[in-house]
Image 1 (cartoon, each protein chain N blue to C red):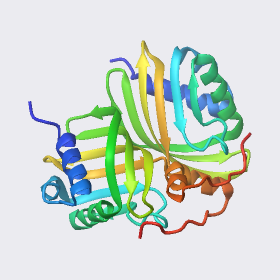
Image 2: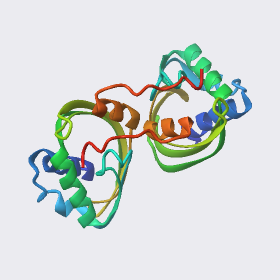
Image 3: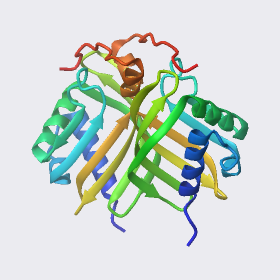
Length: 144
Length: 144
């Protein structure tokens, strides 16, 4: 039984981030990859959409410069033949603000011939912003 | 071939929200359901965690009072025997702030005997907050 592409990609991505070593990740990215992490790109320029392997490797390099992953828990995972979706919690440090951050996200990924061809990531972005700021943003209760 | 529980639940939920009619939803919720929509509960008290059918029906009623769904697109979906995950875009109106809102979310759901037993939803919450406020929140670029 062959290992699902998700596990190989996940190992290579986390090694790329924590060891700033992209060699293992490179062959696991499709040349034509579509990549999107939805979130406030004004605050975090490495969020947003990227297209093509070069742009994705570059953004992984940028993430690796700014983030250390201490731990992640995959709370839910669904695997198809060439698809995978997970809900995950990350314990990170941002090297920019030097603060511990707990991040919740969900990703949907598609693979082609074992390579990542498409990934879309939704993050609990308001929670992320407040943690990165180190203080709550005052919000009106508009829907009580 | 039996219809997947996700489709029946989705129809009943959207009818509950738009028609404020929970009768079809009631039998599709497990008595012991675990429900969580991660997001800023200070601003949106109907987000957050709920446990048990009565609490979930009550929060659906609260959502129905505050939200109209105009359209939703399921951009990705994965189905297991008793599980389902989707990435979705909603076009909503909040009746509280009377503003059109475009919402991106991902959900992971589990069913037991055709009833929803667990759902966890991640939303692009910063984008939601800015739209509900009707203006951007100024953010420092902390990670450039």
